[in-house]
Image (cartoon, rainbow, N blue to C red; front, side):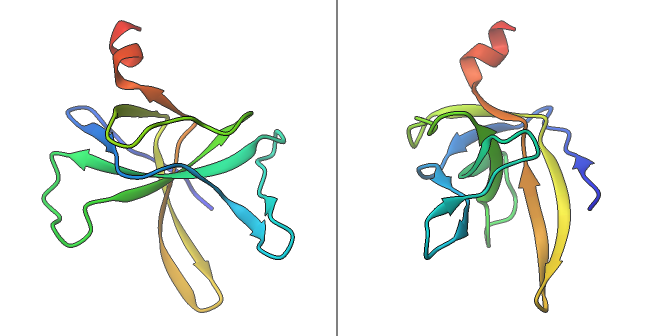
Amino acid sequence: MRNIPVDITGLSFIVAGEPEPKIVDRATGEVKRDAEGRELYTIPLLPKPNDDRRNPVIVVTFPSATFPQIPEGVQVRPVGLAAFFWSMNGRSGLGFRAETIAPATAAKAA
């Protein structure tokens, strides 16, 4: 699977919902982990500006050592945002992942 870096220059992102764990097995509730053993979470983000009125929200997967406390409506920065194409069981689509989800104010101070 090839990751394609996403240039987020000129974009801002608003959290459009609560983070959720990426579940491997719904029966056991096991949370999926990355290669480094960190749990993976998903978070819906609304990029601005955005011309796609059909589906303006993107769902981004990111690792975290603890359950992320990121409130809806705040501005964030998906650090290391990358897109990838996936295909499984006759379905396919475009996914997004990031190294971390940082507060937008901290990103400006860095």
